[in-house]
Length: 320
Image 1 (cartoon, rainbow, N blue to C red):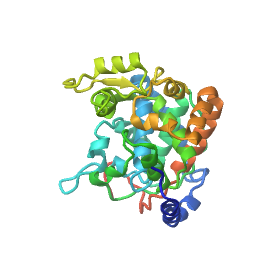
Image 2: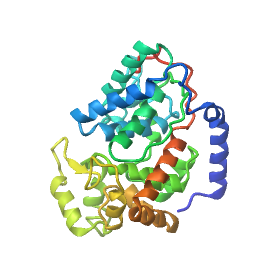
Image 3: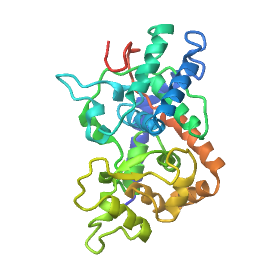
Image 4: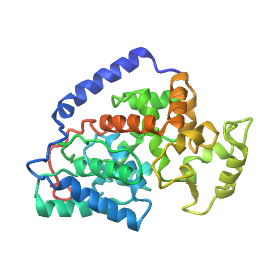
């Protein structure tokens, strides 16, 4: 079911009021005078972490996405829980987030060089960019000048788009953040990196609906492999599947597999549900350059979602 036009207009208007001030304040040369070595430090730390752990790029990209979709890009996903508050990182959709130590390592080096200048939110945005670029993907100038938020609540992670969402639910979720259907298709390409646990696609391979045990849009042999890895009563805690066939390489394989019935999530399959989104999937499957350009543009747009943070944290895990 399509999202009503009046609802979309209202959401876009609300987003515009919410975000305009911070977006206008961001600048690609924000630290040129105050901490000119910040970006090179981040790149060096991310590169070193990747050499030790191939899952780091996917972790940093997902962390940034999950940060921006809750309270805007304010580094709130980096805050630790306290005795009186369960933070975002401990909310159900974020339990599998990891590699926070990479951000900690960057922050320590930058604080030693430029104390109190570079926000954790900016570090995360830049680290996510580097994770993509160092994995063979595109690069882009990251707008900087975000401030860090002081509020982080696990309950608010319910706002994150679910892997079971249909196209209407995804569209509404993205529009609330000022992102279009085109952005949705491009940013979904981030699924080219990483790994998913069984719980995120269990709905497609067991008791799909009253007439099918398996989602009929799944390619038969691919579905059988998923069922083998993720049986109905799976007891292997870390069981799952890689997001595409080149899990550590940022490329357009995700879109090719999607067209061949080999996507993991219902939300992935939903990109074939409308003429516009399916056309974009086909375009990106056919041209990696087109995908890279669209992804970079949508990442700039997403990473500019206002977080309304008031400070620059000295430690990314705690407020001042």
